[in-house]
Image 1: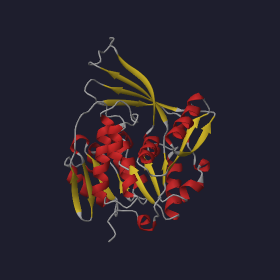
Image 2: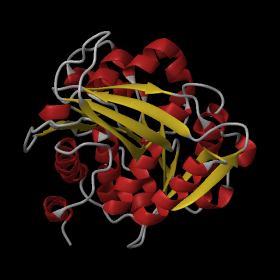
Image 3: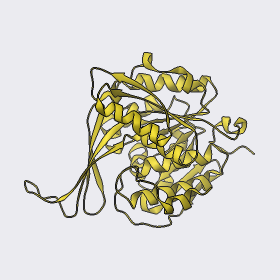
Image 4: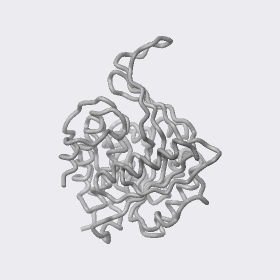
Length: 323
C-alpha cells in the first residue's frame, strides 16, 4: 500500500534511485572554544577550515549512505572553488558547479561554544547568485527526487533558480523534499512570504527542526506543529528533527515519535543536513518512513559527537551504515 507523503516515484524506482540536490556549497571557518567566549577578550580554541554548505552537506551524506547523488550549485572562479570540486570528487558526489567570476566561493563563520551549541554568520558568496538560465536541466529531469533547502529560497537570486528546478523536477515525475533551513531567516523573511514561495512547489517531504516548525505554525508542541504543517503542505510527509529527543514522522497515519539512541553533543554543526541525507537515502530506496527516520537519527547522533558538518567516517559510523 502506498505510504502517505512518500513521493509517487518511489514505486517505480529501480535498485538505484537518483537524488539531485540543489543548493549551497560553502567553506566553514569553524571556531571552537573550550570556555565561554569573553567579550573584548582573548581565549584559546580551535580554528579550522572545513567543507560545508547545507545543500552540499545533504548531498555528501546521502552519498555516504549509499544513494547516488548529484549536487548543483555555484562557486567562485577561485582557489576555494577548485577545492570545492576536489571535495565533492573525493566524496563521490557527481556535481554540476557553475562558476562565477564576480563572486567568491561561499563561506560561513561557525562559532561552537564550550557546550557544543553553534552560531553561524553566512556570507553572500557565489552560491547566492545562481540564475535560472544557469541550471543544468539533465541532472534534474533524470533524477527520481530533488532536494532543496530554504537557503536557496530566502533571497532572489537564487530563489527563481530553485523554483525553476522544482518545476522541472515535477514535470519529470520526481519527488521534492524541502528543508526550511533557519528559523531566524524565516522570521526575517516573514512566515507568510515563506509559505507563499514554498507551498506551491509540490513538496513531498518537509524536513523542519522543532524551532522552524514552531515559527511556521505558532505551535510550541512539536506534535501539534507537525499536524499543522501537514495542513500547510497537503500530501507531504512531515519529518520534524527534535535534536536530542529524536524525530517525529507525520502522515495520514498520525504522528510517530522516533526515540533517540544517545546524546553526546560535541558540535551540532550539520546535524540536520546529515539527518536529511541519511533519511532520503533510506526513504528513496523503499524503506518505511519511521525506519528511515530511525536510521537518520543514528547518523545525526554520530555527527554531533564530532567537530564539523562532515566528520571523517570511522568504524562506529560504518556499523551504523551497515553493508
